[in-house]
Each structure stands twice: as structure tokens, then as C-alpha cells.
Image (cartoon, rainbow, N blue to C red; front, top):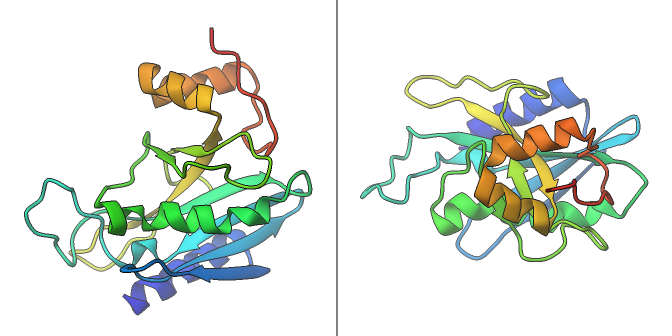
Length: 194
């Protein structure tokens, strides 16, 4: 477990630079989740560290495989200085502990909801999990372990989350693109959903 996390942190550092802050959260019955903060000009990025320590297990599986199975960490990018986004550390740790707590596999296209604003005044309580491989390359591990995927999180308003449930993740992403939505704006309004 420690070896995997050391490799994951090295990958995050090589892709995003040195973290300027880190916080750790432990929930009862789960492993510790750290959240690292990286500043990149006017963008602040938060990346989880700890979610990939164990493979995620399909909730329908009778037994959890301790080696094989999807592994991931979460990455959230927002504009710096617009809102108190550092308060997202605990909600991010909650999302990263979801596979351990609820026995779910977090994958692209999924919606994750924390049931409260992601940070004070945020119009978002949920996120859309996007495809990996862009900002931080997937990390290959020794066989038979699956690679660690670094999944970007895109904050969604409650209206966007409801629309996504009906129309799908790709349709929502296309709507954002067509409307020139800045998904990094921590105070943005919902995209037009007609």
C-alpha cells in the first residue's frame, strides 16, 4: 500500500509540481486520505492521495480482490482567489473514501454528491467524474495490478446533476462546451438546460 502511494505522489509531483499544502482526513473504519494542494498560476488544484491504496471492488462481487481491480485518485481544478475553495479538503476526502465506505467503483461518467456545498457559498454539492489521462497521466503498476487513474472532478449544480441523470454525462459535457462554460469557476451559474 505504501509503495503504491509513494509512486502516486511522485506522479502527482511530476505532473503538477510541488504541493504547497496538504491535509489528512481519517474516517472511522477507513484508511487515511490526504489532499494535496498545487498552485498553477490562477488555478488551484486539489488531488487526493490514499484512494488508490487498494483496488476498488464491484459491490456485486462476493470477494474483494486485494490486488486486482481499478484504482484511482481524484483531481479538482478551480480558479484561485475567487472563493474559499480550501474548505473543499474534507468533501474531497469524503468522495475519495466512497469506494471503501460504500463499496462503489468510481469511474468516468459517475456523479458523486457530498450533500452539502463543496466549499462555503459554492453552488455545487456534486461533481461529475471525467476521463483520466489529460492533466495527470495514468500510472502503470506492476502486474497484476491495474493502473492508477487520476480522475478529474467537474463541479455540477443541482440542476446540472438532475439533467445529467436524464441525458448522461457526455450530453452535459457537450452542453458545457457549446456554451463556453468555465467549469473551473468556483462561483459559476448553471449552464442553460433547455
